[in-house]
Image (cartoon, rainbow, N blue to C red; front, top):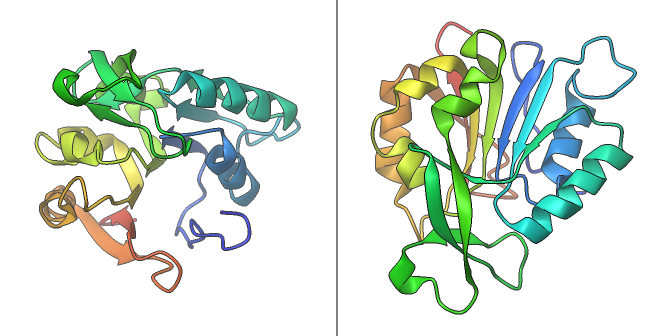
Length: 202
């Protein structure tokens, strides 16, 4: 992430709020904080950063990383979906590959985790609007973008890492475009499964 800067992109506005879905151990939140004007204790620009991570081990490390780097962030220890509740989460040896699964496929590494609704997260930002949503949720994008995408009305820019082995990105991209965004592929030389969407008029 830091060497290749896979999230590097030029946004046509100043980002002061970020919703990090799939924060893992907090590195993406830290990287974003270095590139935009928010989140550091000394900054007069600080407004809001919410990092969402369901894996308990990852969330514990993320909390330490955010605190040790002086980031003013709210860490939500949960998965994200259209509706709040609980779900099975399958942990993996690789800390960045855990994902939500059905109870029938949870296996021995499956644990129950809380699920926070995407609209509830947006309501935590002033006016229910966030500048940038970063989404890397190992196939969970199918739930958030596969139907009922009215929540995107509160988003200015959306950055998604696709997982086509778990969710076909093509209809999801079409849904985002239909919600009033334009598609800007980024860093295709380094990572082909990453997309940036900017709301029309921005």
